[in-house]
Length: 64
Image (cartoon, rainbow, N blue to C red):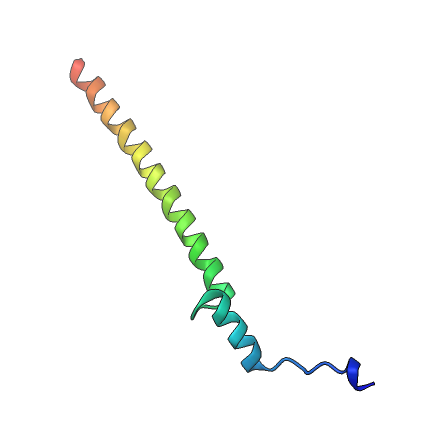
């Protein structure tokens, strides 16, 4: 029966595993950071697209 006994995982064990995988951040924190980076890139692309539209609009107005 003793060979089937598994030592329960303590908070220290979980903390050590998380630190090995993600450094000082938790898995949730890593997911949040990844989402923020994706949103930031989308915002930059949208901003560039809007800037190009405005510049084209200004050029069209100058021709008139």
